Image (cartoon, rainbow, N blue to C red):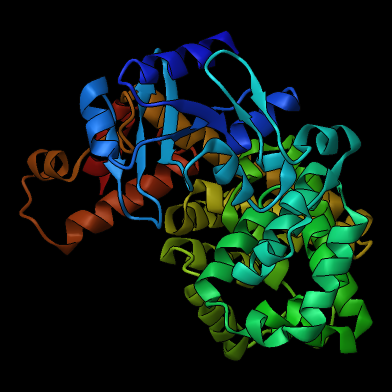
Length: 421
């Protein structure tokens, strides 16, 4: 805490008053150390503050310009006050637990009882001001995200106000751009996907952002299966860092979209097109979309024995992490269907085979100071006195397969293998 106050003092040397605000204060009140601190500064000119500090740069891409930089070894992002005072700024924040500030002398500004709500584990509209929802209805989704992630209840009056707003202003929800829906949905999925979707369902929000998921309720088993898969994924997110990927949770959300049965073998090009269209509208990066589709179309392959050669091909085509995530996704689906005992041995053997392949690829990087191969294309051409062309690429791909299957384990072995070709 002392270090953060020193950051405020350093900024105030530029004659700009500064406060810790938002997620930073909420996290500190909950005993969590933030990686990046959020500040409010009473200056409309972030460029002059950056110049006076001699550090940082101004990011003007969002609705509010932000000064981002590092002071005393602490990464920060600073925004200008919204209003004439810090109290005015806090009143603009949607929920009370984010409407707390800390001054440079350590004093706390908490006009809306945010600390009380943190202690009582409730999410409440700042000042019980329903106009905050009217200004931006997507704040409802943000509230549900915090409720799911922090395991807090929605305050009774806030819940009543939200439900009343949704009953009379459904058109406002329909007008929200899909890109903004996608941004909040992703934030809700990355920590507590099952809880978040259940809360969205409880407030009847799912039809506004994924009507095909709502339609699965016609077949109750399909909808419940989605929730069970997300529950399995939620448990993995707590224990397995490699699984903390957007593709992993999105695959869980879209797993049964367009299907009629739990085995999912009726997936069609229409289903893939639907997934692609939604994720594109949500502004999900194209590489993540490709990973999601790869998981959904390939994870069932892991329910039968898979040899190292197949894993090599998959790793080289999709990346190491993508194949790991797909295999873990297969386990989550099997567990959700109550078939983990049936597929357990096969999945464990496949996991072993994949780990052997990954271990060999990792060994290459360790031996070459991070290079993905023992030999570059230029070195192959020099060794074999070849000219650039398709054959060089084929040799490199063949060398990758030889490494992944254990036939080549050193640079010397790679040279021998190439000469033998």
